[in-house]
Every structure is written in C-alpha cells, then in structure tokens.
Image 1 (spheres, helix red, strand yellow):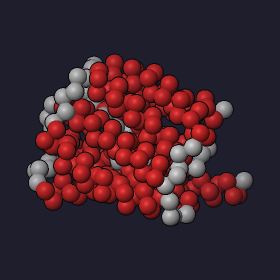
Image 2 (cartoon, rainbow, N blue to C red):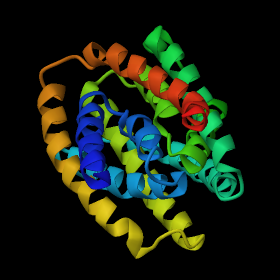
Image 3 (cartoon, rainbow, N blue to C red):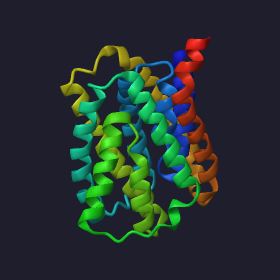
Length: 245
C-alpha cells in the first residue's frame, strides 16, 4: 500500500511541477511523512525530483539562464548544509510543526499574488533567496518557494523560468544525496520506494509538460496553494488526531 501511495503522490506532484515549475516537494513531503520518517522522505524525494528535473530540462531544451542561476546555487549549498544538520538533530515533532507552519505561510503568501512582486537582481537578494531556499530544502525538503518568487520576478520568458528552476532544483537534489550519504542516511531500504517514485515521475511529468505547453501556469496556482495550506494544517494537527484516536 505504501508503494502505491508513493506512486500516486509522485504522479500528481511531478505533473504539478512540470506544469508550473515547482510544487513536487511541497505536495510530496507532507504526504510521504505520513507513512515514512521525514529524513527518508527527503531522500526519496531527492532521487525522484532529480530524475524529474532532468526529464523536464531535456524536454524543454535547456533554456537555463546560467548567469542568474549559478550565484543562487552557491548560497543554496551553504543554506542546505545548515538545514541538513538541523534535520538530523531536531525532534520529528518539531520538524513537522515547522513544516506545517511554513507551508501555511507560503500558501497564503503565494495564493494572494507573489507574482506581483518585482525584484531587482543584486547580491543581497541573491544571498537571501538562495540561502533561504537551501535552508528550507536541507531541513524540510522544500526548496522551491523562495526560488519561485525570485525567478518568477526576474524572468519573463516561460521556458527560461522553467529551465532555470529545474537546473537549480537538480543541483539541490544532487547536493542532498551527497549530504545524506555523508550522514549515513542512504540505505537499501529506500531503493524500492525510490524506484516507485521514479516511475511516478515519468508518468506525471509527461502529463505536466503537456499542460505546460497549453496553459498559463497561473491557471493551476490557486488550487495547488489551497491544497498546500491544508497539508500545512494537517502536519500540525495530525499528532493530536492520532493521539485522540
């Protein structure tokens, strides 16, 4: 049952990310963590998301704005290292509460129009958005929202936005695997889950890319953010419901 659930989550999550540039982690991590420890959830997510990003980049022909992306990646790695250390030192209940609160804040913020924000490219903003993305990614597996706000604001071309997002997310996934290997969190136990996740990614990304080429990404934003809000609430109240049950 766990494998089927993971497959369905990855199909839906990868379809969303292929359509609007992000959303896989924000959907997958709360749902994965209902049936798996969060540190394994992040690892499985990294493997699946890495395959997803490669698949999307190949399909949309690599229109990455490397001059913009590379400085962001540098600060992401710094934040990600700190976030991963926190992941392996904090209590699971604390992590779930943090995840829930962050999901609620992000969903409200993005639901009411992050795309209206205009950001000028400079070093302080690159440091802020890159470090925040890395910190959230290392600790909670959710790197996308700060990157979406940054890239969406400074890139007008849809393909450049999608390509730059996926190139950055791919770098994050690779570094996540390196850090989890360093901390001894990679084992054969996660291999079957990863294989089901990759299968779901190929199915979902094909659906998402079909949508991406035909719809404006804003068309899917608000339903996704509403779902993310509910996931955030669930992460906070889940333990109370479970204990009472």
